Image 1 (cartoon, rainbow, N blue to C red):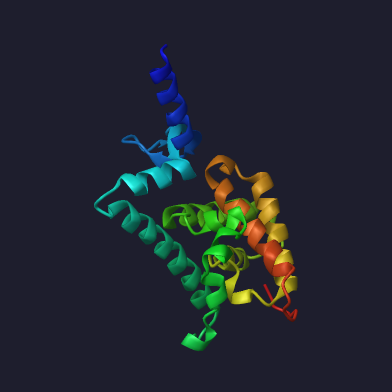
Image 2: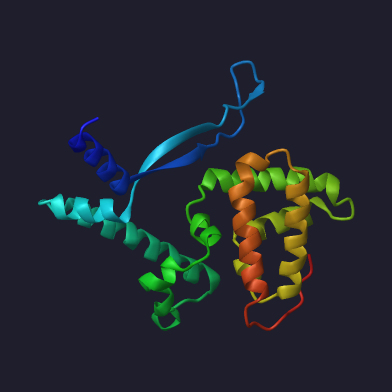
Length: 214
């Protein structure tokens, strides 16, 4: 290996890092009606480092990379604003927490909260179905309607009951009980991590505890 080749490899390592990513698949029925599940795929995916991003921006004369990065930031800002809107009804311009939309606020959010915004609707639906099925056996003193209500509140990220700490604590206990019993941990761990962190955040926030019958 000559000096030029070695230098190129070092430069490549500076610009890109390899990150292992896991790609999960949910169970589905095959042609015979049997439930099958594709094996998890794990890949080393090249991710640009900060140096790599800066280099790409400097080398791009079209401005497309800058536009692409700005669009990603816009998406994150939209998701945060949407989360605020979902938590309060009615919602007006005066209710918008602009400070929470700043880059520093978005960048310092807990990782689990950032990942929560990326959870697909299909995965939320899978969680709701699995939660109801698992907890139907685990909570013999609860009706099907009560269990389904608990699942719906979790799918809504506790937004309807965000000021009811006693209920959130109860739901968090159910969430942990479900996770200990489910056979779909691998698929649904992102949802568990997000909801558990979300519940903890709400439990430590400055709100007035209220009662709620579930």
